[in-house]
Image (cartoon, rainbow, N blue to C red; front, side):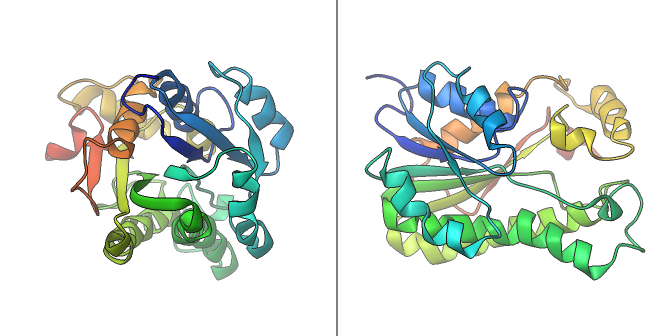
Length: 255
């Protein structure tokens, strides 16, 4: 077996369609020697169908990251397919419609709480549920959208991503003693299912296409996926608590 991730065992969340970043991560991971287990929730049959489009059909287990029973049983269910994990990819985010598209001042706490639970707290929850399967050298990698500034229409999901970025740093601090890294990839806007659910998303599309120094392809998930693979690999053994921007350089340019 050869490749950047030869022999690695990965748990990849967030595969809904073959246009998702998580799908590209799973595909490239397999092509680089990794064993992959996918998770899904709600539309499990859809995830199972998409899993068959990978180079090697991957097993799919059901995980609702807000369900304590699902989290408590996660390690045992993963063990049915692999004997341990070397990496986790967190590609999970959700916010009710009231939390997006300009509703920041009016969104009720119940909806905001849902956004924070699914998009932020789940990063720690998933990592701890899988921790019994991991050993020194392992890595947790999540996906964010630069939360250092406020974005039009992103509203409470932006707040959730800011929390995710902080949670990753704290996870890096607490899991570092066990030799486990935690890093995030801040991808530019991509035409995924998640993006389509955000009213006014086309504002991001126009800005990125015009201002990213390297240019930006809104339909190409591969650059973000490659960054995830690099952080999951052994080539970043002393990097944790970091955010790698994969956005064509947009974040570095002033407005």
